[in-house]
Amino acid sequence: FAFFFFSTVALRAIQNYASTALHLMYGLPLTQTALVVTGFMLCGAMGMVGGGFLAQRVQRLEKIIATFLLIAAACLAIVATGWLPGTAALILASAAGFGHGLAGPSRDMLIKRATPSGATGRVYGTVYSGLDTGFAVAAPIFGWMMDQQMHSQVFFGAALALAVSVLAASAVGVQLHQKRVAVGAAA
Image 1 (cartoon, rainbow, N blue to C red):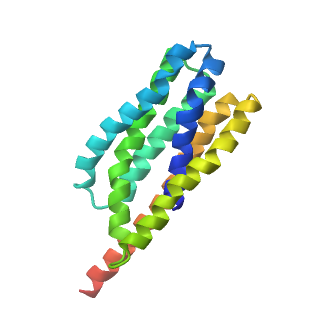
Image 2 (cartoon, one colour):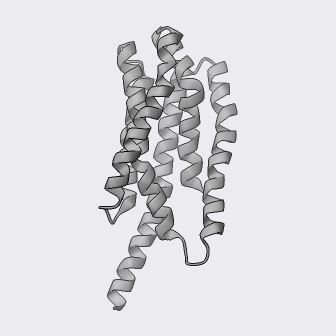
Image 3 (cartoon, rainbow, N blue to C red):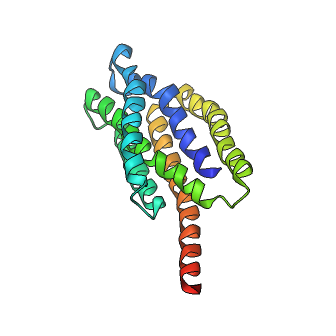
């Protein structure tokens, strides 16, 4: 639940507020900054494809999730600094979608591996409810930031949410690894 909640908070920040925040921070026309959502989602789709191949080759899925979500978070944090030229910030914010997408298949496989036999519906229902909850909670928080002229905080907030989602995924991955080691030692 926590992983989906926090990763969705970051996604909502990008989908709803990144375009306007880029416009206000970097002075780019809205016709250009509107591309950030399209870019993020297209990069995310490409990342999902690559992440699918990667997830089937890796045993410690939480490491894939951590690596690529932290790269995405770093990209968003750099955009938040205001140091980049406007077009570079737009491209980097869009490219963060690639890291978000690469982590997606590993996330789903991690959930599958962590689900006890006979509990699939219950686990997936609980986990995926984090999506809707994250979407609902993010809107007023990031909307308030925009109202308070805290435009860079939209990107810092999205980066922080991705970093926290890594902690949640890592906790699940570590538990799975410890169980695997214990079963191997018992055999």
